[in-house]
Image 1 (tube, rainbow, N blue to C red):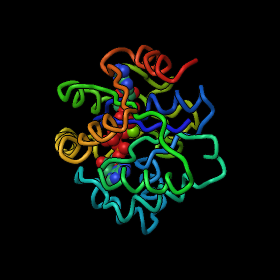
Image 2 (image 1 turned 180 degrees about the vertical axis):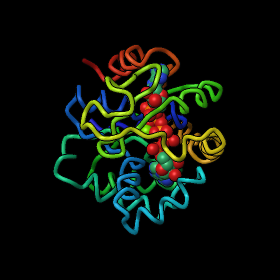
Image 3 (image 1 turned 90 degrees about the horizontal axis):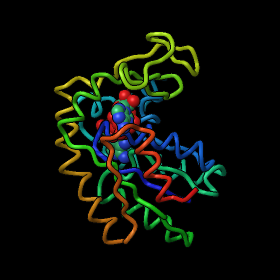
Length: 214
Ligand code: AP5
Ligand code: MG
């Protein structure tokens, strides 16, 4: 099962992708998490990606596409994966489609988590992230057991640099300009499914399971 998660920044792609990965036993691949791990480790890729991410801009396709194609060529992706944050532009979607075509394969579902812009800015300021293991919390909706500490790995939780309200506004603009066209792209392929992302995350997940099957 190969799945793409679509949706605005903060729509809940990461939250739902983790639940999908757990239930269906496929790897969760987030390009944002991969970039953040590189930033944390001070790699060349991280230094380059940070310049764009801190401004709320997309990292150029040249840096993103190869990284993703290498990742999905890994052994653990043989039976499928859930992509979170890729593709984010039409050229990225075309490259992925071409690479899959070459191995006689295709994406099964593109799931769009629909959340209006008004809800997003609120959500982001409450998000706390663990840069060590990628876990995500929300100070109201999903608080960690101990304030500021990751339940999963015990490391410190942070407010992401790009979750400041000014940067979130910029990310929303970039989303509408560059990523939203993917909704038409996958509608035309006949694989787009939309779920209401404004309800409780368990109910969002139930809609996802209704699409993917038990
Ligand atoms: P990325 O990390 O992908 O960020 P994003 O798309 O902006 O999405 P987020 O991770 O902010 O939100 P999400 O939808 O995962 O929501 P979450 O589940 O955390 O990318 C960051 C940057 O990296 C980009 O801006 C770009 O620069 C670069 N990048 C990455 N991929 C790229 C690519 N392919 N090409 C180019 N550049 C790329 O939920 C948000 C919060 O809400 C959490 O606190 C959560 O607990 C809470 N929440 C979730 N669901 C609900 C619910 N139903 N009700 C209430 N609260 C909820
Ligand atoms: Mg995310």
